[in-house]
Every structure is written in structure tokens, then in C-alpha cells.
Image (cartoon, rainbow, N blue to C red; front, side, top):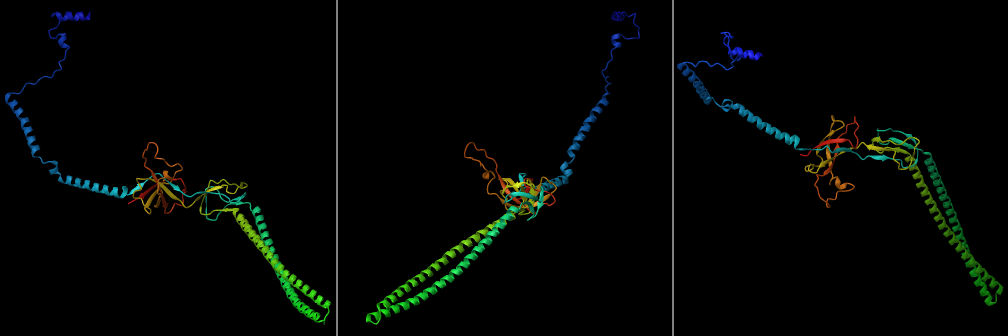
Length: 407
């Protein structure tokens, strides 16, 4: 209805005031910019000529202005010199600090650690060390019960005394037998003299009997005496031979006694060693680790009671085979310890293993069978350290980063 009234009012001029516009023009706002009247002819020509003159003057200024190279020549000279110096510095840095060094993180501390075990069996009666304790050469580690081995030593010493007594007894028998030989020889001499007399007496009585001056009985008696003297001489000679043979038997007995003495000496020496083995000592300076022995434990001979890590340690670095081209024994090494990053120690290359690590493994690779895939091998390099830090604990298996100066 309201719209119909508006339309009627718009159509009827009498109902609209003279000074008001129609609704369709009154409600519409013209947003177009109003154009200014163009300037007069001379003013328009002057306004058009001024931009052309400004553009031409700016172009002439650009052409007459010198380039940046002419305006700042020293900047380019100094920049070129700086680039050359940086290149030279980079080259020398690479030559001195980067290129001559070979480094690897596949390196570890190594040592010839071994187990500590008693050489004789027995109960552990004393334990003088604890875990991770450092000991010097000759320090007592364990004590095995000594009583059984002390008794064995005393028995060996008694056998030594018995063997010495046997030797002395045989020596006395030999001396007595030598005296018997002398007696037998004297009897031989006596019987020889009696035989000679009997021979002369028998010849004399035989001659008298043949001439009729003597009796047959006297001749037969002298002949019998001669035969008795011959038998006595034969018996005396046999006694001498028997006595001499007895000397040989006694000498054999003496040799047996001497062998018994040597055996007893050996048993005594072994008993002394066994008695000494009851005290287990450190053969070199180092640390006792993985202690398993305890007081009252029965330890068998050869049973491990602890592990021992000597003070002598070194570094085994597994370098790639492409890194050892210029590596030689005696080259200096800078060593970093992962456990103590603030510690830097020095060393030198001791030796380079003549072969890769896989070549000495339990099951070396067989590249002649199957498909072959080339893998860069690792070569162990032994590095000795000038001086290990004494205030920190460094042992086998700890990670090391060595850097070798190869040139």
C-alpha cells in the first residue's frame, strides 16, 4: 500500500512540492568524479611542454652520470683482494688443519686383562683387596690356607734327612768293605808264601825219598801240605774278588740313596713353591675388577677369583682402509675421551695391523662364493699414549676419538 501511494504521488504533479525532486532522483547519489574544465589553449600547451622537458633532462642526467665502478673503484679492488685472501686462507686452513688429519670414532681403550686364579687348592683365609682397587707389584691379593702345604714341606725335608742318612750308611759300609778287601789281600799274600814253602818242602822230601834218604810218608805229607796251601791261596783270591764286588753293590746302593735325596730335594722345592703359591700376589701394577672371591670359599687350582687390568693400556683405532694410506708408526696423535671430553691427551702410532679385522675373525668372509658386495674394510691401528690421566679411571672398552696427523 505504501508503494502504491508513492507511485501515485510521483505521477501527480499537484501533490509534489515544486522545490523537491522526484524520489528517483532525490534518493540517487552520483559518485562519478566531476571533470574540471580544461585549461585555455596557451595554458594547455605550456602544461604539456613542461613534462617533456623534465623527462629529457632526467635522461640526459642518467647518460652523463658515471657508473658505480668509476665512482667507487677501490671498493672493487678491496673486494677482489679480500676474496683472494679468503681463498688463500681457506686453502692453508684445509692444508694445515683439515687435510693432514685422519680421525675415527671407531676406537677403544684396550689392555691385556687377565683372570687372577690360585695355583693351589684350598680355603681362602684372607682377602686383601676390594673391587676396582689399584695395587702395586707384589701386593697381596688373596691368602690360601697354608697348613696342608706346610706339612708337605716338612715331610719332604724329613725325606731329605733320611736320604742323607742312607748315603752316610752306605759310605760307612764301603769303607768297611775296603778294609775287608785289604784283609783278603793280606791273606792271599800269606797263603802265597805258605804255598811257596810247601812247594819247596814237597820237592825236598820227594828228592830224599827217591834217593832212599827219606820216607814215603814224609813225601806224601809234604805233597798234601802243598795242595792245602794252593787251596788256601785260591780261597784268599776268591775272598778278594768277593769283597771287591761287594764294593760295587754298595756303590749302587749309594747311587740309589743319592737319587732318593734328589727326589726329596725336588719334593721339598715343590713344597716350598706350593707354600708360596698360597699367597696370591700382583705380578704388575694395575686394578682388581670383578672380584668374586670371598673368605671361607674353597678355591680350586686355576679357578678365577677376580679380573686384573694392568696399568699398561693403549688405543685400538679401526680406521677405514682408505684412511691409512699415509699412516706410519711414530706419527703424532691427538686423543679425545668420550667419558672425559675436557681431557685431551697425546700419543703416537705404534703399529698398523697387516690385515683387516675380518681377516682374523673366527669365521672370515668367503668372498669367492655368492654375490659379492664391496665393503670398505676396517684396519686396526695400535696407538700408545704418552701419559694417561691419573685422576680419572680409564679402562678397556671405553670410547676414544683419535686424530692422527698423517702429513
